[in-house]
Image 1 (spheres, chains in turn blue, red):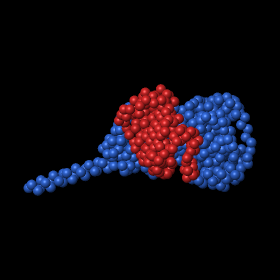
Image 2 (cartoon, helix red, strand yellow):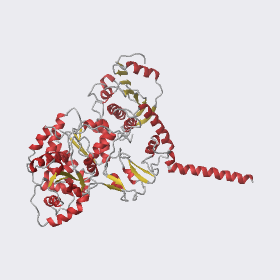
Image 3 (cartoon, chains in turn orange, brown):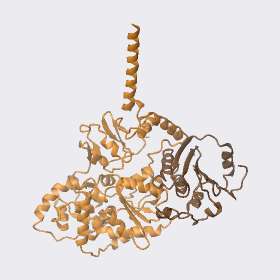
Image 4 (cartoon, chains in turn orange, purple):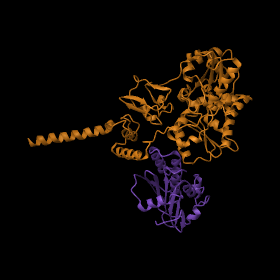
Length: 439
Length: 176
């Protein structure tokens, strides 16, 4: 299977030298993608959804997020940065919106654009889509790459419910690439478009987009990685605030709750869900058709939405409060999106339907799967049920599954091993005793 | 359980079989072969924290077996409805799940008080749910019709004052 399967890129990697095999990461992985084998953590690339839980759980800095080195921008004549809205929640309140944005130009970009610019357009597109697909309820937002992958892996029956149009940063990429080509007379490969992102999943999505028809971005930088440099520029810019365009009302894209409120209207009911455990519970209920009263569900893997991404610097609640303040203080201005509307009607933002990658199934053949399931249950009854992770699998159930799939053996269970050796010792002791009695 | 039409309703008993499956369903019910796998769970009365756990377990099991996502959803909906029905309307009961390589057989048994008019209960919108149940968001009167819609065969055995048996089959390779 593994040789034929496509190799999956993930924006995180394990530093083996730092890994102690402690299993902290194994326990927090929502798709049970991590195992400790030979005292080192291993990530199954087919199961990983880039949620970032393991990065946060690792206290030994052994799981490291990967993003592109900033100097890759120099490979391009014209360098564009697209900012995730959560970026603006990362600074103290004395740093103005304009200054925070200008700092990006100082890093070497020729153009700095914001996801926030297309928020209202995106909302209109979502409403349009919902009204055109009334027979499919609820529509699930597809903006969070982790959620999309989670559905492919664990809830494949919900793939048709996914909102099938590009997310704001990709919409902006398509639009900018075309408009810059025309305005500046540049070739496609002279323009480098990069995302400034709050999470691992968005880095992965840049390098391995799901359902994209065309070449999108040329790289992704994490907010955390550029933060230090940006702050130095901010210090300098504070005395001389620039006069540049901002989109305060669009910043709500970073906040999952506000986003749902935005889509919600007279004929559309929207629900907002964030945090990966909540997302999974909700997806399971959608599967049961118990949330069909909603037309749209905003699903975000991180706490409070993108502000909770693990590559941010600020706490998700503080960042959310700051962004809310910026939205409140900001002016509502009209943004001309006619070009976007035209592209939308031309089908430029369509995405291909996604295929499932079911990780739960034990075998493609149901007869074999039933045999394996029976064996799994049998093994499970012999395991101690402590879910201690000492074997390196996330639970006794997962170990039983690993054994059935030939990825582990019953000897991996340390508790059983100890119990067996105790019994053996007792037998030996008894033999010695009886031998002594005979003498 | 001798020959019956695709839909048969009598006092205290209701049968529905998707057209074309009569023979297979008949054979199964008359032979009742041993299941490849079985699962059991209790459904306590009016315990809405617990209700739904059994059907969730069935759903996870079917995912492990690689059952088609569309079929999985039909089983999930029917099982969840049936489980909630037992929790909401009866004095408690249990769910038995029997799995074969071609279909799943789910059986719900409760301890009463029974359905006084099954025909009426099969009408969409008809509900006897009390206020407590409705406050929890259940009891819209879509339970039984929804189970029927999502299953390939449905059998209900019930009389007022007696325990109810509800069982249904969903085939893994059916086209719908």
